[in-house]
Amino acid sequence: MIEDYLIVVCGLGRCGTTAVMKMLYAAGIKVHCDYDKVGWSFESGDMLKLPDDHAWIDQMDPQTAFKLLDPHRASLPTTRDFRVIILTRDHRQQARSQLTLLKTCGQHVTTNARALQAHIRKEERRFLDAVRIYPKHVHTTFEMLVRNPAYVAEKIGGLLELDGDKVDRMARTIWDRSPDHSGYVQEASKLDHPLF
Image (cartoon, rainbow, N blue to C red; front, side, top):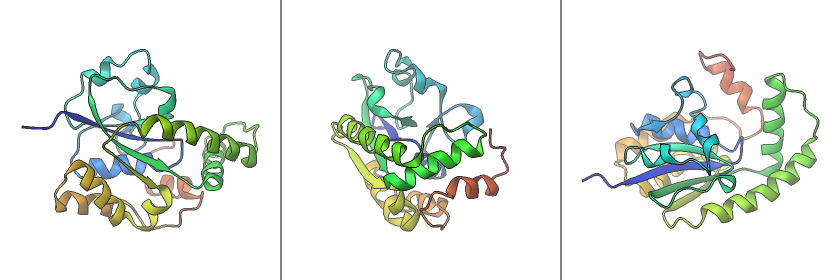
C-alpha cells in the first residue's frame, strides 16, 4: 500500500527549491505545478491560494511533491501528512541572487543587497519555526546542494524511503558550479526555455 503523505519543498526565494523539485522529478516522483513550469520553476499558482484555500492539497495523489515558497505565510492543512524538505542559503548570496533575478527579468529594483539580506534573515527565522513542527523533515542548504548533491540526494532518499537508483538519478540532476549568486543566469543559458 502506498503511504499517504505529500512532499513539500520549501524555503525563501533563490534557495534551491527548484533544483530539489528537479531532483524529485528526475526520480520519477509526481510533481504538482503549472504545466508550463515543469522543468523550469516547478511552481503552481495554487500556492497563492493558501492559507484560505487548500482544497488543491486535499485532492493531491499520495506522494506528490509541491513547492512552497514563504511557508510561514501559508499554513498547511491538518488533513494530510507531510514530509518536508527545508532549504536555506547564505543570506548574502541569497540577497544577491534575488536582486540578479529581478534585474535579469527587467524589474526596477529599489532595495539594496544589505537591506534585502536583513529581511531574508528575519523571514528565515519565521519560516523555520513554521516548518520544523513537521516531525518528518530534512534541512539542507543551497551550498551543500551544489557542492555535494550526492549527500543531499541521500538525505532526501532517506526521508522518502527511495531506492538507490532513484537517489542516483536525483544526484545526477545537479550540475557542478559555485554556489555564488550567478547561477540563475547560468541556468537560463543552459535551458531551451525563455526566461518567462
